[in-house]
Amino acid sequence: MAKEAHTTLLLVEDEHNLLNLQVELFSKLGFTVLAAGSGDLAIRLYESNKQAIGLVITDLQMTPVTGEQIIAHIRRQDRELPIILVSGSFIDEDLHTRSKEHIYCLKKPFAVTKVMSMINELLNRH
View (cartoon, rainbow, N blue to C red):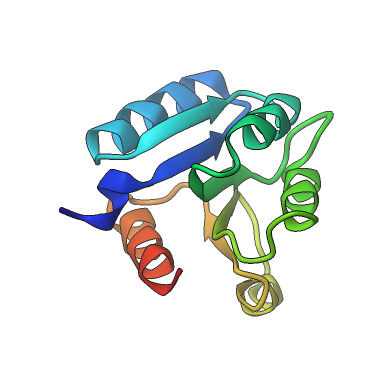
């Protein structure tokens, strides 16, 4: 059985239509999905499920709690948890620097094959 079938994913996206689509997609791909429509909810879900979460995918640009703040909160407790940071814009320097922190950047819009390739690589490393 594929590793993702045993993985709980914390998915954070403040655009609710996009969040619903992604929940449906990742659920069909075998993930247990904890969905958060805000940074505040993401932090609460992380705190109550941190032992089960094997991967985080979070949007960068949200208010009032940003993707960066979610990552900082998680990193205070878990330096190794794989995180995919999603945004409409990144610069090349972000991609190199972030990979050293177990944070990987994915530019919107993304293809399912691209995100699944990234997830498989992260889960096989972890």
